[in-house]
Image 1 (tube, helix red, strand yellow):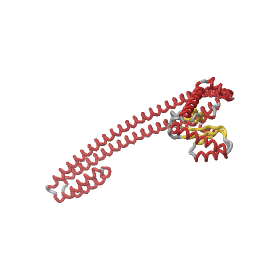
Image 2: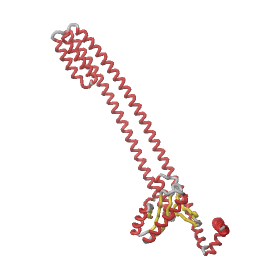
Image 3: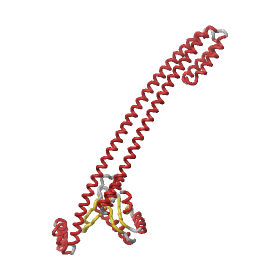
Image 4: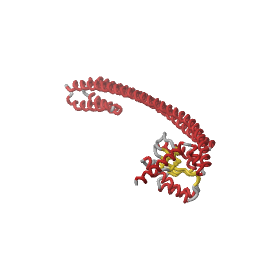
Length: 376
């Protein structure tokens, strides 16, 4: 048993050293590849890798231009923020104006109450003078005073009622109390004059408030029109960015894998992960190299790309392949991916429908080349 265990350990050690040499030593890797008849394939793969590096450098330049455009968008957002702050200051000025109006109304109300109190005191004195010799009119004067106190609280409605009440009182008193006619007439004229003055002041105040509200409405309308114009400009800029990206993509001929990875990054940005980076990942699992075409560690995303799926058998094989890769990734990273993706460049319409049903069954996001082109 011990001899067998030692032999296994030696074999494991040799395997690890062999894999490490393959990883570090290029000449040794070519020598092994040549021995296995894979030398020409590896050279072509290296040439493809160099070409892909060049393509990635070109793509980096494109992203640099896009970042400049994002900077312009950021400046527009800052301008929008400034407009919002200006609007907030305008609202504060409005609130301050309304506060001044409220204070002026309070002072006006206090002046009115003071005037009404003086009127009440004058009428009370008149009532006391009349009580000495005209007790039979006490109830009529009390009703007059109560009507006046109630009426002063609704001064817009009482002018005619008080005038009629005073006229009736004057007519009742004319028969035996002519000496009080002039006093009552002056009292009525003073009241009418005071009410007219209050009505005119309130009318002016209402006109000023209406004019102020009209100015505020016009200013708000102008600001909203400017904000709407900014939004339209921002929408046109975003369409320009997408069209530019599409033209650049066609000009440099991005490989479908890179094409699909860019689409997934856009999708993750819309999901709330703007810093997510999608790339190709090569892992070693149980001594075997495992290549993941679409991979993002944070948040965890796993996906595969394929150029063509021609029939149902290939469709089922691709679904099984991505399910197997997903299971391995879950074991390595100890968590489930938030998104599992299968990107297909070309497939007949009937096979596309079969793929959609299989993808939905296994909670896989199916992305066809047409969908990517429409988005980007």
